[in-house]
Image 1 (tube, rainbow, N blue to C red):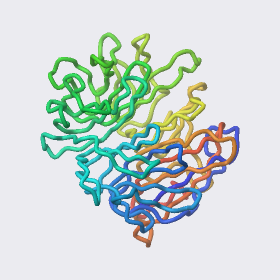
Image 2 (cartoon, helix red, strand yellow):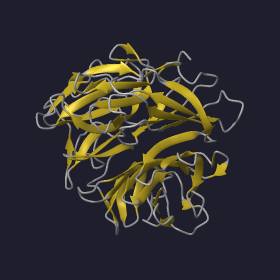
Image 3 (spheres, rainbow, N blue to C red):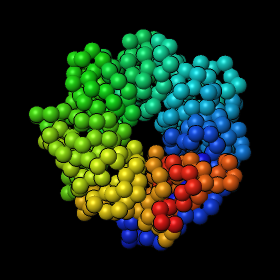
Length: 411
């Protein structure tokens, strides 16, 4: 599994003019990574289905130190068993993990599908178990929702949580106990995001688990009710939602909810895999012409300036422009751009996750992990990728490469 490091090096360009992919270090083994989280301690955390990082045994969760250029395990443990971390979320000094694991390695701490790690003290804590119904499920999304409700939400495909036997595919933890989120949802949850309108949830579901509310792949939890994203005649999207993010409108007045995944329509609005919803007006809108048909988007990340939205997934065009698996939406100009490097455009295969490491006025770094089978070294080299962006904000992406493909298309 290769990792790519990304650093901003100039101002004034929305695309990656002058960018270059360069070797960095050895990456992750196994089936690849699924999540990235950045926190205030300077480390970058990667979750996925791997047992080693740079030759260090880590078991599903690893911390990269960009200063020392070293991989670190979360001890004691290390990591989780089985090594399957699919979601990460951070608040204060606490890192929450979700996935398909059952225990913290080397401990007796209960941690079925969810775990909590205090990065300031280097200690694991039990927050109970998810999937107490023993359905063989998994957690695919975790999210702190402070200050709204001030709870941890976990979503995926499961039945029950400690003290909440009827929690169906989504549950909430208040620091003391787990509880149901209304009636739950009737299918898998892919993403959970805190917005000003409530906790936004996306996935493969159609309705609440009791069939009481029709949502169609996306909805808000207000704290007491499930609410659909409706345009008055149709609700939600006609396909799965993988990512949700709130961003300013083009005018800067108010916000919109960007929804991305694998669909063709949002409400009654034709929109290929990405659309935006104005909560106040109850209106769905397109995001330019979106991406090419039969492509899909896995992830979105908003720059600290909230002026540009990066999207990643599996696609060939965005806004009609050639954009292999990675593209940028200019929120003010309402235009799409490709991410272009000196050794190619975009990535050679699917982008799984994107995270910004924060705004920085000087050149900084970021990381992109993904499977990379072309290399002779099994653990695969890490890459760094220098980009030019208007506000010099470092970027991190998770990429899955095709066997034998170059680091970037056209390289």
